Structure formats: structure tokens, C-alpha cells
Length: 144
Picture (cartoon, rainbow, N blue to C red):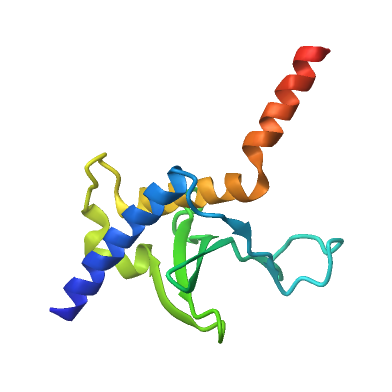
């Protein structure tokens, strides 16, 4: 069935994206905020973080954390595949779209939800240069 093929490809794509992100082979950037009118606008319900983006295969990949009303301590994550010429979201891979595949496990025992969550966290740290910041702070503390 075509749906099974798309579902399987989606899970494989998540695994590859997770691996390449972990290896540092993708350049993740902050995707900014929706409806923001400048840096002084307070974060709230009217502004949402668009997540982090990178390019692969001629497309923009954007990963985003979304609140889940039913599970406030476990947000949803979505990976959007975007046409760079039109900014159209071509496909979204998320908890909702993966449905029956959420029980799938990688060779490392990771579920698609964990792949999305860990990829989001790695993209966040890479885009913000967290590793360099931590090293800088550690060096500063050692000199005090």
C-alpha cells in the first residue's frame, strides 16, 4: 500500500536525519518566530517559535516543538519538508502522521517520537552554538 510505503520512508528519513544531525553533518539554523514584530515583543500566545531549519536534497527541513494540550509535559514534534521556491509545506512528519509507526524501534531502541525529540534538541543546540558557549563558560569559570 502507498500509505505503508510513505510511513516506512518517513521513519527511515527520521532515522537518517537524526544520524546526520548527531554526526554534525547538517547546518541547523534558527527558523525564527511567527507574527514577531521585533526582538522586544514578549513571547506569548500570539507568537510561536518556528523551530530550526536546514537544507537537504534541495528542500528545507524544519523541525518544530508544538504544545500538546492532552500531554503538557510531553510536547509534540513536527518535521516539515518545505519547497524553498514557494515556502509550501510539502509534507509533515509528526506524532500524528506517524500513528501506527510510533511503536517502531531503531537498532538503538529509539521510537520515532524520541528521534523527533532528540533531533529537535540537537538542532537547537547546534543552531545556538551551545557547545561553544558551554566551553567558553567553563573556561571562564576555571580562570576565576
